[in-house]
Image 1 (tube, rainbow, N blue to C red):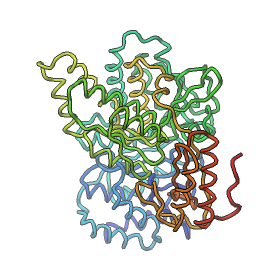
Image 2 (cartoon, rainbow, N blue to C red):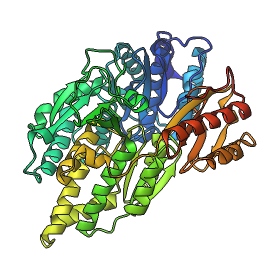
Image 3 (spheres, rainbow, N blue to C red):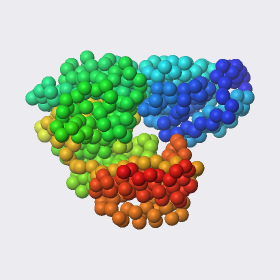
Image 4 (cartoon, rainbow, N blue to C red):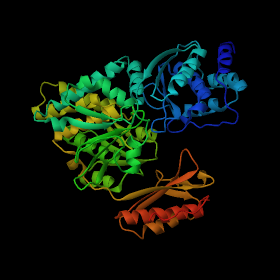
Length: 544
């Protein structure tokens, strides 16, 4: 227990509030910042042990993404830049919730269970977003790392995807890139410039993009990156930090409210995008001359990217398996378009980026996006190798060579570790330039079915259990039958329900041929949930 004297001593500086229990969810721990000091210290301990176990650098990101300014949170990053493995989420949750005096014995158990060699060196990379609480909370993480004599590198203010990227670069000995923020900018921007070189007739209008930075870290980083772009992309940046983080702006606000963020000046038909607070989600949109707001969400983004990749793979004559991974929230129109028109494999998984990431790894090229705008593209080692060979082979004919080179630059503009708003923005802008497409033409690839999302308060969300990637409710008894009966009343209709991962509500999704039908179906399904799954408070009211 000798190496725990320091832990016991330092942990008294990070006391746990009595009765507080937190769960490591899809996005790590997340709650009001004033409850998180002890969690941060303990995640420093977990990351240090994980580093010793994997003999690799581990990342700890202090952020609450699209949540309000007063919240904060923490996510752990595994050696290849991916999210923390599920088995260790259990360790993290357990350690977060034990009482002060139990810390040493719980650590002892963990070390034994995972057969960790405590003499192994540990390295932990720490990053934070722009919230006022992030300074002291990231200090608490570092305190935890040093309590177990781990080495740390504090990257300070970075987007979440940048920290994921740094971890992978370091652990691949620089094969993936240089583990610095400057290295990140130069790799991505160089690839973007190489891609857009092939479009000599771009006007300044086509090079122009309006960006809503959600008053968060993404805005700061776009500013830092601009000079690397050599005016090949000209960004007008709004909500760059003078307002409140995520307040009436950012990807989540735009997606849910289906309207322009506050504080943005934009002309009719102009291409715009919004980041979220930690820079890992992106949503595109524009307004048409009749004043209507048009949203291009994660489904539209996945469709654009997969169409582009499929065309290049065909031109390169490469027989690689391409798939798009979606969740039940994906609009049916996108699924039909991908399967029927593009002949692309579509896989559906449970909600939560880690589920999509794992499914995408099963293909040579896996494109995954949640409808909320969080996603990326993964290439297998074999796929990257084939593309490289083709690009380097002097006997490749011109058409195939051009496609192979474009694929190679595309791989370099993508952050394969996690959804990344900056990287996705550069990829989308390059594709639109190469295809000579306007945002309106992109939007017109298919038309979304009208849809509605609602939530129903229940006394215990776990009463609802689902199967088939959350598309069918298996309990309570009678709920799925009720949904099936309601869906039959409307044209082109679909509906599903799932328990929230974070609060005692059941989320309801419905789509149908008209907005009125979608609203009506969502309401009727909400009533069924309220009646069969123990709704609390007043029963759901109709939307109109």
